[in-house]
Image (cartoon, rainbow, N blue to C red; front, top):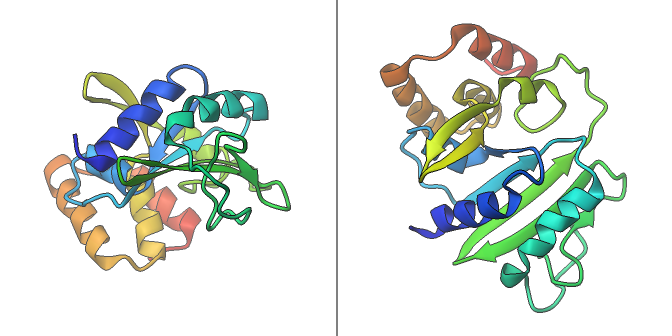
Length: 189
């Protein structure tokens, strides 16, 4: 396994049935057949996940924790054994970051006051109804649908990644209704 695969394998083993989660970001695209090289692994846990449940998963990642605190800012934070999670000042994000065999593993619980019908990749609750399960290395892996990801990718202007997702859709075909809804809710074109 290469770094991102190992990081994903480690997290999925630690999370198992402890928390409801899904893979998002470039690793989610890769495991769904998109020709991208993930720079990190991003796992999103359901907004209803309790601090204690996420903390239990985070402490199981202790072998990959930083030796010393780096920063309390989520942008620079690295999880330590003593502090595996950090929260934003407003409490909307609860976050951990570990380095697994040179690859960054980021785990986030994001709580927002978003209309429950709004479909966005990492915020709100609507995305959870669209979560797909795929087989990966003998595991059932929950992933955000490519249609939802494409809306995020378009809104961020990531043209090369958008081309890669569209190339995958040429093979598998998108769920047109889901894609249209995701693009409309993201405000992408």
